[in-house]
Amino acid sequence: MRPFVIRRPKSLDEAQDAARERPQDGVLRAGGIDLIDRMKEGIDAPAELVELRGLADETGELMRALGPAGDGMQVGALVTLAQLAAHEGFGAARAALREAAGSAATPTIRNAATLGGNLLQRPRCWYFRHADLVCLKKGGTACLAVSGENKFHAILGGGPSFIVHPSTLACALTALDAQVEVRGAEARTIAIGELFLTPKQDARREHTLEPGEVLVRAILPKAGDDQRSGYAAVKEKQSHDWPMAEAAVKMSLQSGVMTDVRVVLGHVAPIPWRSREAEAALEGKPASAALFAEAAKAALAEARPLRDNAYKIPLAQGLLREVLHRVAGVPLPE
Image (cartoon, rainbow, N blue to C red; front, top):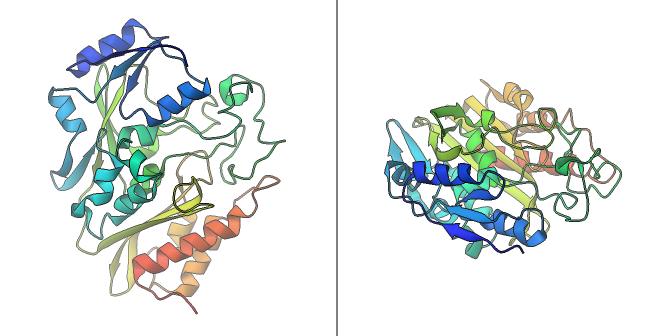
């Protein structure tokens, strides 16, 4: 790994100035879990890391905030996954975020990994992570997964790259209709879906942040008394592995009827995959096992698997059905 120095600015302006001084060699760092992995793997070799955890200004306070914000809630970019997993203020309405944070990685990593780092981490595709391979995401001419081993790659929205988005929190936050606040030359607040880029938009990038921009916090909207949500993932090794598929669901439930439904799948597409087809199948209807089966089928109707990953279709369908049953309180069929 290339030697590097760490700078510890006290304000966001100072941090951004430091990043601009060395645009080719400097990088902003929060928890640094994914960044250090990439440096060890030889994918990135920055000469300078600009540490964000020591920010002492108003932005730093926002980046560490976890709690009420107006009618909703805020989660700062420096809040760790362990803090999210232990937070009791999410309740049933925002349980998906707590469950997603608690399922990620290992306890040691959750104590260091942050919301911002989790949302902005780079793909875990083994071709992208191999220092000697030049895939499409690293400036090559083709996605090597198409003709290679593609067991864990995308079945929805893929092409020209078939990565899957690695962020567990992104799946839950998308289901919860979160927004994210970004600060650069100007401050802006965008829907979380606008944070991510598909390979068709830009095969080399996964998010819309410009150089020097910093993700400050996620903002969750007001939740009604009848809102509830949930998340689940399937992994080869449930204790610490990366998911093969994820599902996050949010709904309001009154007298058994579902409204304001959100259905999001993870690790099946290059971005957190919101299924409007599944949502349409559920919206305004009484919760039932038969309806959940119909919605799960609709969610994967457009799947286009590669050679090795067709198993993800029934896997994601079954996972989504399980989450829908749990969130709606409908017993699973025997």
